[in-house]
Image 1 (tube, rainbow, N blue to C red):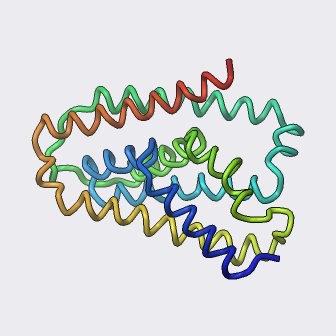
Image 2: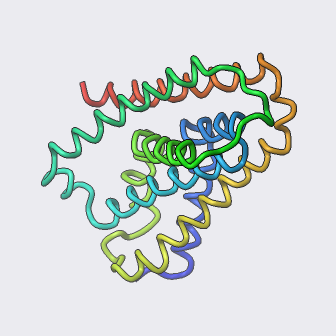
Length: 207
């Protein structure tokens, strides 16, 4: 059974891992620049949902699930690679948008959510944390369903929401600085490179 110290260690480790810029944070920043805080939070929800999937798999035995449903996991990995490359192309070819001209729609927010979810599933940093680092922080064999549902899941949501909000609100506060064509282009190009890098990292492990 885990105690308060274990939960605190988990929260700190997750917060540090989530706060380190990677494909997810880079995409979150780029989406907030182009779509504002609403689009940013829609993507953040998708990013968090991806983390919750990894957390659940880690707690309930990702290795066993991967062995049992190997073909399904392979399919998901290849889909994630393809989608990350598609996102890289979208960011690389993104056109300049007036900062105050974009208005979020239900469809665009849903696509932000899907993008966030897919990015987490294909994020090597997230995979490394839940498969390699998490077992060092928590004794996964001692975690019950009730602890997973009542403690770990809410803790993950809160920590990730706080970390994501820091980036979103920080970008919103300086969004006017990124109103030029050159500034937006640089942000989108960095996001494209991060997406492509994540996809190529996954591809290298598959080959």
